[in-house]
Image 1: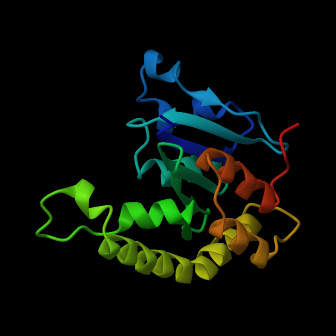
Image 2: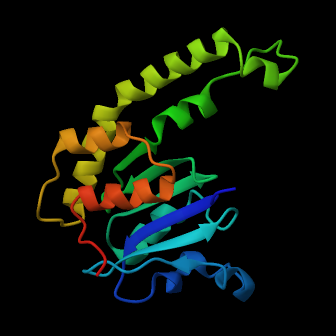
Length: 192
């Protein structure tokens, strides 16, 4: 069983866990938060268990930090939905591990009696291929949003859109690793 929860990425001169968005966490929950190695420039990543992050926390974190931030909602380490926000309120999002996301997002027929039987049908596999194509068509827009967000974060080297698109189409065993690689490819300095 893999990790399910959130990876929160933001810039701060203080420990990120001191941000007011985490004030509602009791000490027991705060003890479960794992801080990844910091990146130069004050960029930090926190790994939070499920149930400790709310969608409204991202705008509050951006306001507090006065810098763009993003969060990856990870499901069992197999896929993640990354959402970023800059200080002007512009958002972007992208799926990591697109094949797994397509399987998750494929709608089940309304008259479905047994989900396990559905997963082994040609109709299911065709529906997954269709959903994968839909998600793939969004990748250029997703990559463009990520690149614009990176520029708003003050990263001086512009990432190559083709590289970001390739990464968004790639697969890693752990979505957490893919998230870290995405940050690297976007030009954020690597942890030392």
